[in-house]
Length: 345
Image 1 (tube, rainbow, N blue to C red):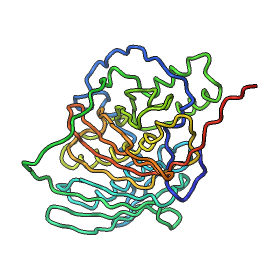
Image 2: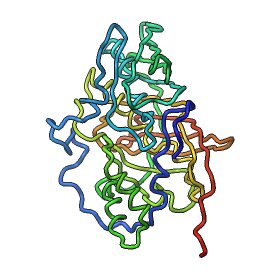
Image 3: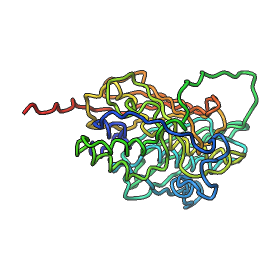
Image 4: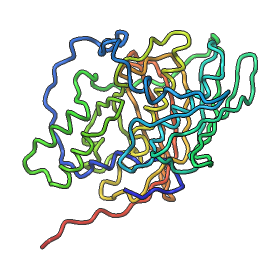
């Protein structure tokens, strides 16, 4: 993976296990309880680390907060989703409970340093009757590493309502988690040693979200495919009910989740190339409906364009009942090199 640069905050995790062999999935019994019920997959006392640690900012002064880190990618640069989520938490603290986030637009301007906390400075840009805007600057070493504008609004009824149709995919109870897939890869006797070491490092990562790829060979870039991927995702642990006031928290968790493996979608047509450097440049989100971030949502990702050492990705987070909850978009740097062919000696 690339060294730290001042051009972004993260590298894509999707190439990390690209050398792993294909896997044949065994049947998996359904879970005992449906995750459609309120946080049924976790004891409500088992609070998500995203709430207790990652998104729990320390107040230093009016509109000034400090955030710490829970999970750091192998690149040893801060995870972009963490910065987006923490920035939205900081912005949400300055608005009334009856206002909800509906969009945010961000730029990553410098690489984040995982050795020190991040300061979040909020500017109350505008307060209107139904909309308000907050500008957030994330600072390390006295310099901004990230800038964001978030807009909040008062919920309003409208006769104008439409959305795309949710893709038809297997339910999460019928799929394996990333951790279960890794264990399955590791059980193969002919697995290359370097791939085994890489998978064990992945397994040791304490990522606070749970992933179930719909098509694991696509997720791990075993063969050239269309730049599209689908996976179920949810936060680990329990998060407060999505009632008044708590919906802001679920939006902040979704902001964290939205950046995971997102940019890697643009790499799916190129399994014969390895990433020298990749980093998020900007990130945008639009929140459409209420949702629970600790229940399974389908993340539909696609890349309509790549070129000039950049890639554009777009995503949609779907509730299990088919409601479009969130839309996302991101552009990032993608510098690659041809994979080294095996020696013929």
